Length: 516
Image 1 (tube, one colour):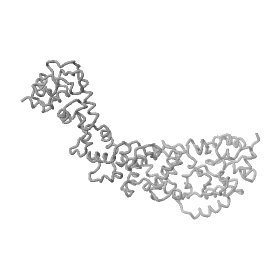
Image 2 (image 1 turned 60 degrees about the vertical axis):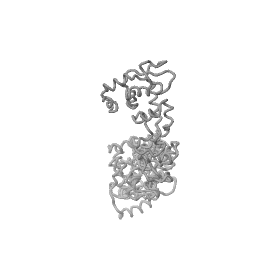
Image 3 (image 1 turned 60 degrees about the horizontal axis):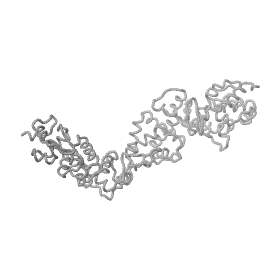
Image 4 (image 1 turned 45 degrees about the vertical axis):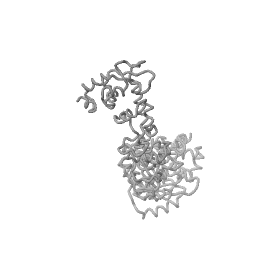
């Protein structure tokens, strides 16, 4: 294969397309597309960093492909690219915009008779966060001609624009590169940064920093679509301080921002508080993973904003929000909203004095309400418990007093019928416990009697006998076949009196009282 002569050296940090453009200017005096066509290299393949195109160009130009490949932004998927081992989205590049430093270009061509052979485009200039030339502390210039060839970033095609930008640059303001830009440079060199940032993709770090900074620097009313490159640069500088401090600081700042922006109903408004950050993360067409920032924002919203159970929030359903309106909780849990409001009010989960008609806007801590809701769903009216346990009402009252049966709300002032109901789970536990007694007998032994008869014969309260029974202080307890619940239980009056005379260490004062 014949090689081009003389050889045009590749400069450090130069893009493959820039190198090809300089060779075209030197060898043909023309543009890069015809030059590459003559070499049998599809221009689109070189623009996308395809290895075959790069290797063929190097073979023709007598260059080691390693450095050229290292400077290639390679397409690795749909709108996905890679550079120096770092993968990022297409938005991390400048796209069809050609970015450059006019003073760097002026230095390139200084002393050359043919400027087209000297001016070169740097690979770093292809990256969207690279907005300041670190050599000249100059804001970068952008050119877009509105042609398909913009994707080639061929400086030789826009000499007039370069001259215009050079005149502006000579009198323009100066600034140092942003720390976010410096982080990108260091990361592409393989240098380590903050651990939690290095675990993210480089484009995720930059976009999160710019969006956070845009919100804090310009306020929630500013739209991302109206931001200039200088504004994005300022946003990146502001956002970097948060990124550097870590996720907990970000969470705190977001929470304070959210709590300071309330709707008319008094609830925080994420849309109004987070502005462009909210718009970015909540966009219906967000197909790229934005990184940990999404979970941070999601957690803050869940912590402070009333949500509907099952509501989709940033790609995930919120099954049990921390906060939710009474109406939303009641609908999700299958309860009447006024009933639920009454239960939660009595339990102290929501404040007294809220009108029932306003339950749509009354907010409760879902986690605190959940246990009450589960108990409410299993509520058993007190009047039904005697039949369920086959016990008298006095026995049921004593079981409640002992805590063996628990009310839906164990509260000093049970204001609702539901609150006075018995938790069905405690009824079932009591039945299971009774069924564990044994053995079963066909008729009562002469030494054993039913609970009420035992209280009559011993003159000991039902409460004390029930405590002995459920505390397992009695050694022999029988159950009568064909009977259910406590009606089947047979106890020994002699054992009851023996327990009275010599109570176990963990016996209550109720039992000790009968010692005399």
